[in-house]
Image: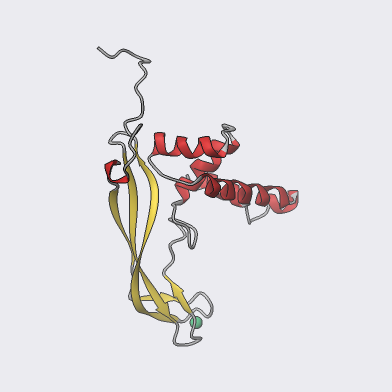
Length: 172
Ligand SMILES: [Zn+2]
């Protein structure tokens, strides 16, 4: 009978074919609106079309399955100033990112607080959180977070605009 502290290897250890890995759990999210306020001129802007975006989130450590958010969002055109923009998704992820804020925050924490090298952090994220992040991507996140922190003067750091690292931590 398995006792406490028994070593069990990761279930995906030795798997060489991608199709043998556990399939992601898909979660639908909507940021789809008929109208949005234009961020440039504050006029009402109608929906031009809808689009979708996949965001990798922290997976489920119980089932061992990754977790992907499928976000359906609206794209808008402002008739007043001709500005094109997407419905706001900043609560989920940064623009153009393939990962949620939670993944970025966890990755940065593993490196900054636990001191893991980037390659080990990448493996840790897969083993314990079921999300694949290339180590170079983690390095970019950590360096971006570090730059924000080191360039922030004490006056700015205590002001209303926190550094990226602080924001990431707060969003957990
Ligand atoms: Zn406008």
